[in-house]
Amino acid sequence: MKLKTKIVDDVDVLTPHGMLMGGKETDALGERVHELDQQGRTKLLINLEDTSFMSSLGMGILFVAHAKYAKRGGTVKLCCVDKRLEQIFVIVKLVLIYGENIHDTEEEALESFRAMEVTPSR
Image (cartoon, rainbow, N blue to C red; front, side, top):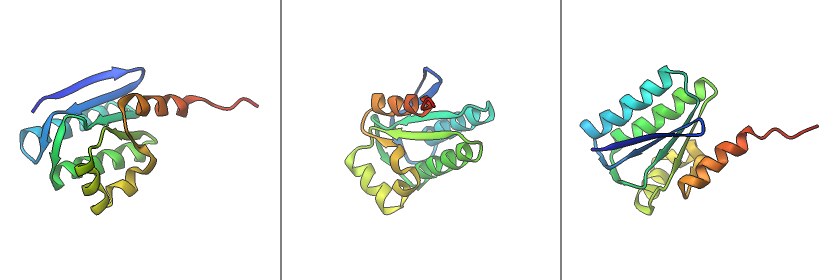
């Protein structure tokens, strides 16, 4: 599995490729999420456009990422979730955890991070 990584503004963007079914592909994503968490990073976007399937192990990484970042006041967002994955997210209630932090496109998700930084003037 290939895991593309990049930083846009101050958002870490991870794009896993293939199936998150356990093994190397799931380990690579989990390890990278752990590394970023340990570095104290607070904004993570996981782009699922190249992910064709996800088992409970892959979903577990998304649960753990959300929990770790939320505990420190950080945010994890998802984008480009295809219809099959979206149906699974609904069944396992992952959609309830991420709620409004699931976006159709990477740009939309990045824009939502930017909007978080805008503080209304008084």
